[in-house]
Length: 263
Image (cartoon, rainbow, N blue to C red; front, side):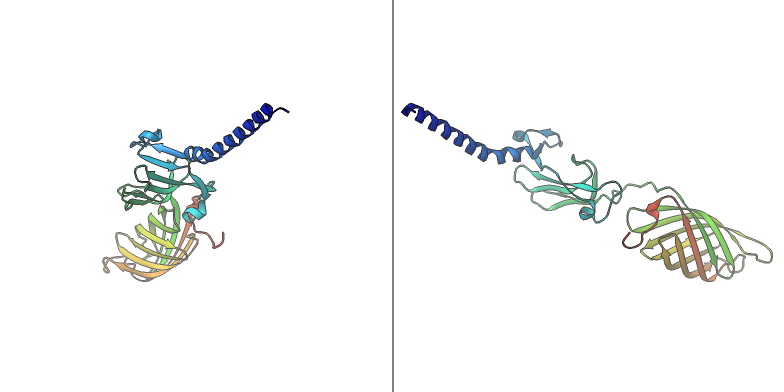
């Protein structure tokens, strides 16, 4: 092998090593750029040169670990973190069902450029000033005993079924036991707040009001004790005094029922 051949071979080897070194240095930067998404002030994807915000490529996290509960058919959520380009301070943090960050779940926070919290929201709850359409109606049957017995049936609406704390709004109609061989109909309006194994209930008819509290079995059976107060004691049906109540709920909406611990 001649001297020229040896030098050429050495030159090629050094070039290969130099190329490898250059690629090694630039690969993390290229990867970082690919993992970063840049936005303008209207949150349209653009190049870095004119960007106002940027987002690190979202990573997945288990749903229960992220928001403390499971979501049917959604095993994982994406962690979304946005930053201001000018100072690298966080602009937003939260969880979404999609990698684009359009379907928020759980708690989220927005930050000012100085890092202070500008706004926060729990996406499990309706936005302030909005109304959430109640879920499908729940059929309820209630049997109460005070000075007389009262059998009531109707529909309830679960106003907040996304959390373990359930709020039921009920509308129904009841029929009393005989008052001197006369039966009376009482329209029923009530609110029932169920938490774990306990519940509290307040309601009214055109003849009386009542307040109850007691135990609930998965929100399917409520056994309550309380007091009923007549609006006019001199007119039947008075339906007043210490009251015991048994309430049953029937619905296909599984969220209306609570679950046993561990299930």
